[in-house]
Image (cartoon, rainbow, N blue to C red; front, side, top):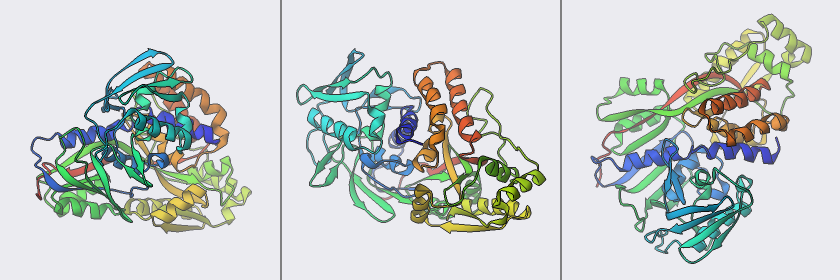
Length: 468
């Protein structure tokens, strides 16, 4: 897939307010009246934070962290409603120009006032060097009027600009001697191998946050996260499944713990690398040999409209015949997976089905760094991969697919029309049908093969009361 299409896809994900969910979770967490001021909040997620630099942002786990570190011109709640953040006021002068005025009480974590010049530097730096900079091609320049007022000049009309300006890519920050100075609730204290340590930004203009420090950790073991949830006084864990919650209930008392049904599902999928040349028919044949839980491309709970169903093109005998004809049947199939309890279990099910059909299968289990390196370079045969899907903002469903760069340029012509339609369509039902079409086209070319849909949960201490 061309770089432009990847960026268009990513843009559609983030401009439907996917980032606002984390802002909403943070606001809910910090507005709990029962919370007392404490020293440390521990947040654990399946994978570690890869970057704190918006210019390099390309993954879900870093995105969560950036909502603690940075402020943007606008922010959005879980319903996608946009409100002012760093701005005191704004207005559209016309289709090509937006007037903005900053609040008077906003400061960076080093105490410097946030000015229009900082906004210009932050946004234009991203337009120049950001990993996904073409996403904001509608922005021509930031024209500074004075310290507090500026204009956003456009190259062409952009009805989604306010929403686009809510995400961490458009964070306002400062770079001093090669170090990033933050604008959000927290500043960077230390970046460790597996933990990002944050400290309270004493100059932040909002006061409703009780924790002096936040540690954001990557912990592959869901079992370990469950143990931690039962023992740590101020704790928040993402990326858990129902079986993890059941385990927590079996091994400890969940009284005083909060179990939240997240808005996120994982589509446990198979994706194909470049180490072996699988044809479309080979992929369909392999799919036909698998016993899977999923019957639709994405969870039925996603939309009100009727959604596309999964196919099984061949019988077992026909599938074996296809694979023998192409030579795949006589070659060892290597399936790589991430070293988590969930993924190791799922890959065993896949291997069992293929071996039961007479294929030779080898499972390759990798740690995070090696897995991501191979995934992004496409130096693998087949990978078990979790595609994240959000039931409130379903276009984000392609996020991990794009970030992992597992798609192909052949989809470009067929997808671009639908993405353009999605940008201008306002009718909810029609938007859902467009999203369904996008997923169906992606699946029909077997850029991923869904195996199961897993609802994710958040586990936390209800009151977050503890150390002082």
